[in-house]
Length: 342
Image (cartoon, rainbow, N blue to C red):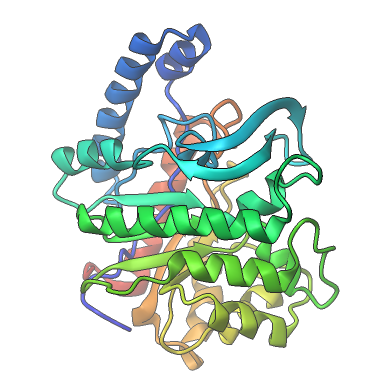
């Protein structure tokens, strides 16, 4: 699928919020918060362009966490006072969701006005939302039914975003790589088969204009050992164009995930650890990437940090300065891989 522009310098979407935005969110005034969000997004666009990123996002600045790209715009969910194992506030589904309108169009229009680079949009995958919000006895018959309803909403949003000029859309499902392990994690609310079916339904578009990429980030870390058959099912049954894969630990399982990708799929390698401030050694990173050329066309590849820098607004993984240094390093790695041609 190689082409002349493959979003070589990528990132997952979420960025560290500026202090002014965090203060405005804490204060809670809706007008002041909206003004702070708009100002922060405008500054984030300039920030990304100065870093020579080939993608531009809103940093998830208008949202409490990465899930809210969907949860803020649909009915049927209730926010609780509980948190899950990842520290995320627990939401539960009390009825099948219905979209109250477009989810991200207003912010996409803002991005489009601010940059000539087509904006990138990140969304939580419907299978991830179903797996983490389904609770028996609350009005939804099964996690699969919930996932299918969410898949319809996400697919409609993807089609709308593409019609508005978005050319790179990424779905995040941090649970999927746990299920391609040789000894997979328990299925939880959704089985592996159901998760594949739900996320597959979300990324299927009847028409896909030239240059559009619908990506999937199936997890932030590779399992200890990959089950090749399960990995093949993941990559073939979910028809995403682009797979955003962890590649920052030098583990054999990371290589095996790339090896299992079908030839026609793009891939983006998460080559720097977004959770640690220490900068990676470029020679070490390149020594991991170079051997892939034996079985993958690196013209179909891109590089990025391993995950978002602040998937939860109140819990950034690094400081703003450490984030900048990591993004500069990603840009430098891209130039080591492909020269100055993007």
